Structures are given as structure tokens and as C-alpha cells.
Image (cartoon, rainbow, N blue to C red; front, top):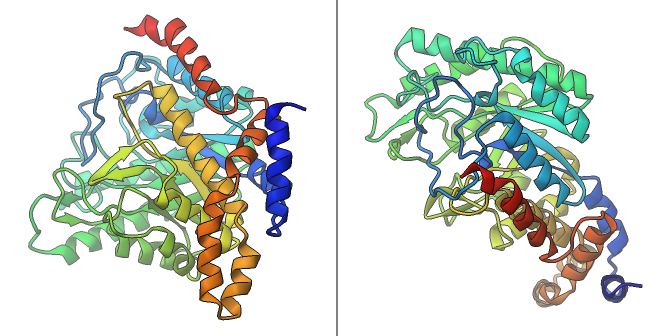
Length: 418
């Protein structure tokens, strides 16, 4: 037996002392999908022929060599990241990652044919696709989209949203797995508006128009994502947390929680149980907000750990979809995917290994001392040994061994793009 196998056997016995089945935790993790976001690989640029500068309160910082410049390069980079990850993944696309054969196609003109290359690739990779409307970085996204006072601007983005839903539904039909379509709009302003209600009424009317066609949920799952603020919209965001929660609840769609879209002292984990009482499904975006929504690479920390703990404690894994959402151009972009994905999955595994029944027993007996002692003690349990064993069983490098392969890929592939 390998050293990793020996360490796992000892860890399994240690967890068994606390009533935890380590092998069952691994099987649950193995059956949980994680959606990797394509925009990490090219700094949210996309493949539009007339694409402009990044805008909409978001920013990719850094200029590390090797950025993907084409769909083929981006797909190759994602495939490399997949090869270094255990378990099951999905690929998450924004609408701006269409392939047009060199033609200039408006966002209100996109159709399923512009994503055939992605669907063929996903089928070969054995992964499913998710999708996103792209209502930013566009001349018609100057502050407002659906909440614009300009009817022509609103109609343009409504048509974009409708087409994205049709594309997502067709993806879901072909892959036999619902495509999760995330709706996030940049709408907001730098200074307080004179009429917040009017803006939000327009925003809601636009969303209703996008959602007008009833599409089967076995093909498409709509989700709406809020944001606290962004650059250039520090004082008002039409799609606030309160608006998006209410809209998701009233319209029966999913709600997206992004770890970087709330105040730094706000716990997203605390929102899970409340939300699931009113909303059927949630989409979780793991990232790392630093001071503002800077979308740093997700790492194991209190926020990610607590989020995964709450999902597991609420027995809600069947009601949440988990995805990555960050874009760091200051480091190797493929490695960023791997770091963020492995951190997210390791946090979920640690949550699955939590001695939940023991802690719950203490709590129901009114033994707050025992519960707090168990919370502290579980930090010392060997979750890392279980993670390494899981990676080995999935035939991907354990520990930091994956970094050698990532650096080889950088030398032989990414280095050619300088």
C-alpha cells in the first residue's frame, strides 16, 4: 500500500471514532459536479469580432504570459485543468465566447450555431455546459441595460436574454443535463439615482420579458445573481440582494450567491438555510473578495469552508449547483483554475467529513461546551489525508504534484503565446 493509502487508512479509523464514514464522504464528493468558468482563461475578453474594453464594474488585473487568444486555445487550457482535477466537472460559458467564423454578430443575434464548437468539445470531454448572459463590456451597457430609460437599449438586452435562454435550453437538451443559465446585469450608477423605484421597475419588466417563454427545467435552469457594487456603480445597483431574492422567489427560479458580491463582513453561509426555505435551488459561485469584488482565486478559508459546511448541514447538496467565478491575470491562468477548483472541492470534502451527528447530539442535549469543543477539534482531523487518497483514486496528482504538470504545460504550450 502506498504512503497515501496508509495515511488514508489511519484517517478513516480516526474519523470512525467520531461516527464519520470517510469512504461515504468520498463517494458523495465524487458525485458532485463543479462548473469551471471559461473567462478565467482569457481575462473575460471573449471572441466577439468587435469586442471592446472590459466594463461593467469588473476588472481583470495582471498580464501573465499565456492568455488564451482563441476558442481552441481556451478549450485546450480548460482540458488541461480538467486533467488535474478529481471528480466531475462542467464547463461554464459566457455568451461572448461565441464562434462566428470571423463575422460580426450582435449579442441580440446570437444563436445555437455559434456554440457548436463548444458543444462538440464538451461531448468529447464528457462534460456538460452551463451558460451566462453577457450584459457588460458593450456600447449598449453604459451604466444600464434592462433598467435603461432608452427603450431601444432595453429591447436589445431583452432579445439577448431570450436568445441566451434558447441557447441554454438546447445545450441542456443535447447533453441530457439541465444547463444552468446565470443572469447578471451591470445596472447601476456611481452616485445615488433620483428614482430607484423606476429603475427597478424597468429592470423587473425586462427580466419578465426575457423569462416570458416557458422552457422545461430538465433542459434549462435560470438563476439571477445580485451584486453589492462595482467600479462605476458604487452607490446603486438595480440587481441588489433584496431584489434578486424577491425575484427568484416570486418567479420560481434559482438564486445565485457569489462570495465576492456582499459586504466583507457578511456571511453567505448564513443565507443558505433561510434561502432554501423559500427558493427551491441555489447557484453558488466560489471566489475570494478582497476589500471589494476583486474576484481573487478561491482558497480554503473560513468563508468557503463555512459555505460548504452549511450546504452539507442543511442536506442541500441536491439543491445547489457549485461553480467558480474569479479572473486572475497575474498568475498562470490554468493553475488558477486548478487552485480554485481543488480548494472548493477540498472544502466540500471537509464539510462531508464533519462529525455532524455528534455535534447535533451535543446541541440537542443543550451541551454547548461539547459542541464548541467538537467544532474546535475537527480542525485537527486528517481531512488532507482523505483528500490525497481521493485524488489518487481518481488518477490525478495528489498534493502539489499537479504543479509539475501545470508548469510543463506552461513551458510547452502557454510559452508559445508570448
